[in-house]
Image 1 (spheres, rainbow, N blue to C red):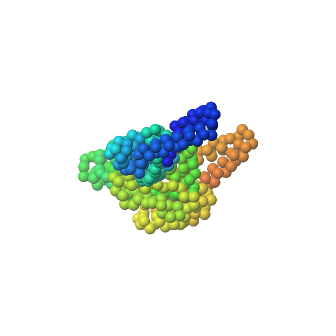
Image 2 (cartoon, rainbow, N blue to C red):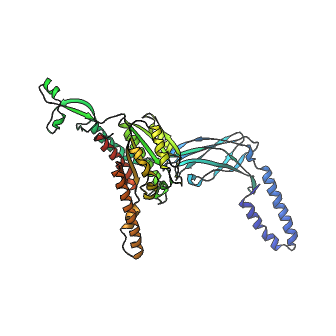
Image 3 (tube, rainbow, N blue to C red):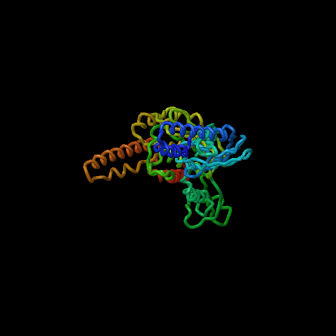
Length: 440
């Protein structure tokens, strides 16, 4: 049983007769019994929440920053008209609106209640319980019941770096010879022959073909295809740090490093698949969290965003030895391995640096990391003593980061270390440069 605000108002109004009555105790008892009788009658005349039948449909996925509509179908299988409210409860991070639905469902009828989700967090959002509150005809009291009606909406990574894809695809078409400019690089594949024009590299002249024709003929080249690109996402503790500005949430807090790395991985995967390369994906901290292997080019992005969606940073130190072993077990041929992690000197010294030569000896390796723009701001502070100490700490952090990047480069590993918003395009440009140079 539940009581409404109207019951409290009636009880408050009953104070006046009690106060003016010459027999206040008797008056109080009479009014109390009368109010209790009305409440009991109202509860008896209200519809039973247990008579409601629930079902669900609607969206099952949405990108972070977008809305998702979930539909709760409510059918009245009871013997009385159901008047009251229904609450479709979700986690606070789902941003469910409206919180309550006013309903009036005749016997044998059904109603569709639409709850719009505005999630502020990536991952799986699960519905909680559905609470139905039936109010009697007097509006004084009623009945309430709750039951679980499960539904899941998967909130996918937003892939904000998609805006950089057209410009990188234009560069790729230029490299592949679909535009007039053709590039020759070491290890690239022969494409076709054409007549020599001023500006062509004389080393590309095909003398045998020239001898057979009256014109000078040059060879054209295109980047090698069918290479393998392996994206390795570090989901350990260093991926939990928030940097930059969250472009999808209503609060000013930054995105975790993990989400920036996901965004860069999606852009590189889309570009590499268009270039004709095979893309695999692995998320790892102390164990393999998820992976995508052997996906077709048409299904690659869908599988990637679906596997990335539930990933959350694990507050443990990543096991670099197990990570490298997992890559070597799954990738036999030479490949481009892109490790998305953080250039944390202590973590790399104790974890990745000792085992990285095992990986770089067989594969081309890129380490891509997100730098924190706030460190640069702190390094510029000089106005008071506190800011000077902050600047000294920030400068030390930057020097350690540069030192670890230099050590990686000396060991034959490419390093991409940029602010959050620049990581995705910088990594795509590095891939295109390696493609043009024939390093893949």
